[in-house]
Image (cartoon, rainbow over all chains, first blue to last red; front, side):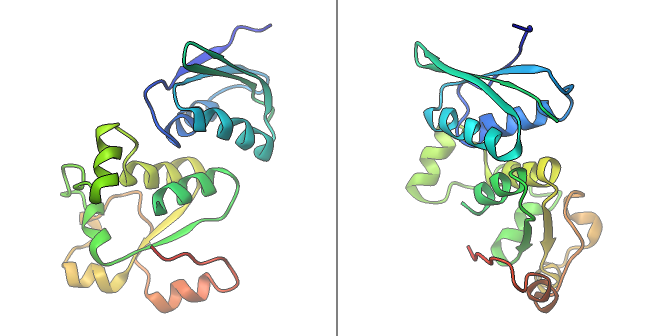
Amino acid sequence: MSERTVIDARGSFCPGPLMELIARLKYGAVGEEFEVLSSDKGSANDIPEWLKKVGHQHIETREEAGVWHIALKKMK
Amino acid sequence: MAAMIASVGAVSGNKVTVFLSMNALRHFTRSAGAPPPAEGPFGKLLQDKKAPGFRQLFHNAVELGDAKLHPCSMAVDVLGVGPDDLEPWLGEPLGLTKFLSDADGGQVWSF
């Protein structure tokens, strides 16, 4: 597994975590992996949906102690 | 809600154009300063939880999703502001006729 760039969006509400991810993705390299940390469950559902729609790879989502970790790879 | 739909819609590949008019416009002037007051009880809850405010979300829509926010030219005149008084990330002021003509055939939502 490549080292992932962590985007700590805990405490931010929808669509904050998605916006923070997109702002960081803009400057990332194709193939780079990111992990969004979110305490907002809605974002944990929405971010994978957004990834599917725009064509980035959703690697996994897991929940640990009330924090969702959404891992993804920039594809374009 | 308009800002949430505009921002998420724009970053999801949709062409988003927003027509800013009436009471909304003064919040997009450089002198607007402090965040706008909460709108109703739910707005207060959102503010307490530090949810992103509408100005930030509209800015996200422009910066991250190439949305266009056009001030209403009539509201600009009534408010008495010039182009330099408005946020620099706004588009040029438009008349309603031009906006509706550009939006013809698209999905129009009014808030």
